[in-house]
Image (cartoon, rainbow, N blue to C red):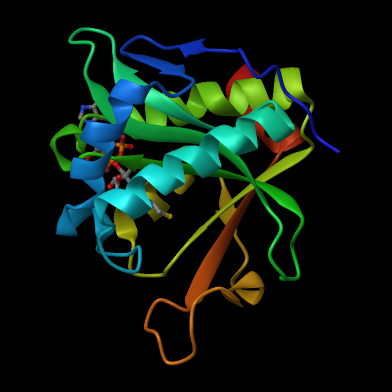
Length: 192
Ligand SMILES: CC(C)(COP(=O)(O)OP(=O)(O)OC[C@H]1O[C@@H](n2cnc3c(N)ncnc32)[C@H](O)[C@@H]1OP(=O)(O)O)[C@@H](O)C(=O)NCCC(=O)NCCS
């Protein structure tokens, strides 16, 4: 359906977005154990669940040629989290779709890094993979994530809010807001 170049890395002013390395697993465990990071993500992950997520991400790269890139800060070489694309194929009105997503360690918040990396990921997705649109979603209370979506020029239609089928009934984090960005709207915004 959609296909990228699995060996592709992206470089921005402050970041390198690349495939995962074994050495990313330890800082990723730390990030996933942080309650601030997990506030809107159904709780912190333990080490086993964190490593399993890395394996799932890498399998996604192999299957689709694109995925959630490991993020490295150029100046320090430090691992900061992930930013990238993944296929959303759970049962919902808007799926299958390609989702843009991000998760950074809290010490890297508030510097514009998520938006900087995500802008480059959108260029890659639209110009090189040839996507026609990209979605993103989160719980209504995740203001930081929604602010990234809005900075990217994504827009929300409240009639597309949805109940995530993989979140159990009664869980506060079931309801999600959906944001979209079409290639034409992105090109108008980026290329003028
Ligand atoms: C969602 C998440 C990635 C957002 O990170 P973030 O740092 O707030 O987002 P940005 O990279 O866009 O940074 C924007 C902030 O940096 C500030 N900033 C500082 N220097 C900047 C610069 N050079 N350029 C741009 N913005 C800059 C902006 O003013 C803004 O600050 P504000 O939050 O006080 O308004 C982060 O909160 C996170 O990882 N959360 C946990 C995981 C999660 O919930 N993921 C989403 C699941 S759907």
